[in-house]
Length: 119
Image (cartoon, rainbow, N blue to C red; front, side):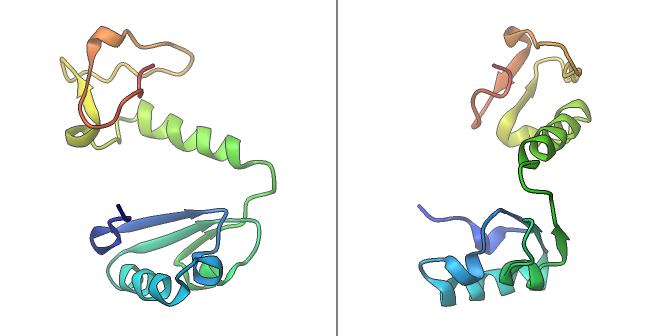
């Protein structure tokens, strides 16, 4: 399969430069420009890459801090209940039980198409 770029509203490009290094650069250029027209492209990369120059958002992270940023993003998504519940799944009673420093009882969460969120 391929990425569903036709329906993408927010593209997060992390530590790569698809406009310069994709195996099909012209195809990547067309697809990213289509996303720019209808949505947002954000780039996380210490380098001001070709893709970063075209993106609406560029986060020039310090090398080696990717893990901390990814963990912080996951923390906000989980503790604030911002995940796509219809796709990922949700707590059986609708109450968000994700808390910093605590584990989640597996029996309280019903996964749908994504697996391993509470494990």
